[in-house]
Length: 114
Image 1 (tube, rainbow, N blue to C red):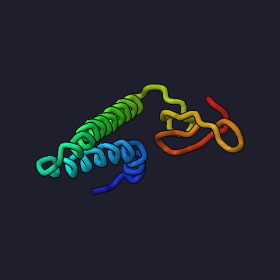
Image 2: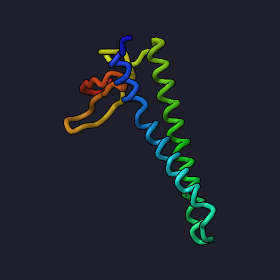
Image 3: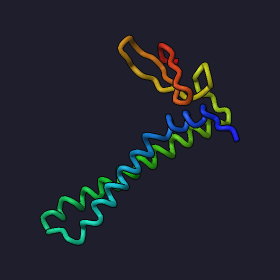
Image 4: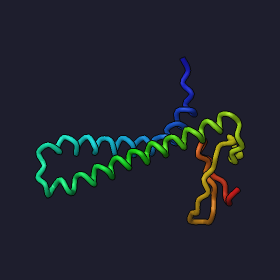
């Protein structure tokens, strides 16, 4: 059994932040859910909106994860990306020495927006 380290690295690069955002929201939602039975009415006015915020945070992470899945699907099926190394999708960023583009698949950088 061979492990494609490049594919693992690409998956971590694409999906680590959205997954962390989802898990953080769900964990904090579960943590605040256990305390709902013993709350005073004044504390309940704070916890209930916070729970809605945490549910929204998890939903945002799920949407971000779904978008990254779409990007990965398009890249694997030959959609034109922009990276000159792997053909993956690029982000256009501004850095210390000017504009540059960074590939979301292989991590390669190139100066300027292309």
